[in-house]
Length: 267
Ligand SMILES: O=P(O)(O)OC[C@H]1O[C@H](O[C@H]2O[C@H](CO)[C@@H](O)[C@H](O)[C@H]2O)[C@H](O)[C@@H](O)[C@@H]1O
Image (cartoon, rainbow, N blue to C red; front, side, top):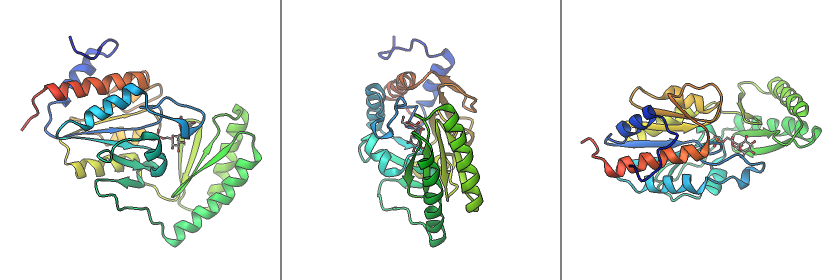
């Protein structure tokens, strides 16, 4: 019997994890909010569950195994809430900001991008001010308009107004829909681009990716047949497997760590 409870995880998922754990170099890429961390009202208060954190730390200690967080958060925010050692690779702003082993890449926007971020700030700031419990989270290349605590009506109208006014003012705007959030960015990189970048950087033979939100679908679509995609929670997905939420994601990660620690990696 495994030291981690396998209860509730399907036999197929357990078999796929067992197979994945055997590859020579493995990349474990994980979304943060809704996947490692349960959703909360204040994004700064979000933390991975103790079980998810323990499993991530365990994976970080296994040879030939790299762990990356791939988040929509700004990189600074991701560093603050994830509190992981430097050996964890971090991707913020849906792939726009990347912290690898030699962190030297501060994001530099060109003059035209900076101007568009300024315009976005003005337009979206006015929308946020016009609705109760609607607020703006700044990011290096754009903003997230949060509506989690707003009424359903205000949330819908705020999103519509923001979308129409921002698109009228700014060309080539990237808009991402998330959970109680609408995100606007002047760069269009996706989590799928990030997974491909990380795959090359880590020279991984296979990738495990877990995520819960619409933007994680870009990452699931970028997976290859020998990779494993795990959707956390409800909603349509291209991932091959699904679990209920962060508690089960932690269970899966612990099992993957256990298989990889105990197994023989391919040479
Ligand atoms: O890609 P992720 O790591 O899942 O980040 C997506 C967004 O997460 C944060 O917002 C979401 O989580 C908050 C905390 O639980 C919640 O209050 C909010 O309603 C969610 O949308 C973060 O604030 C965003 O910047 C991220 O893009």
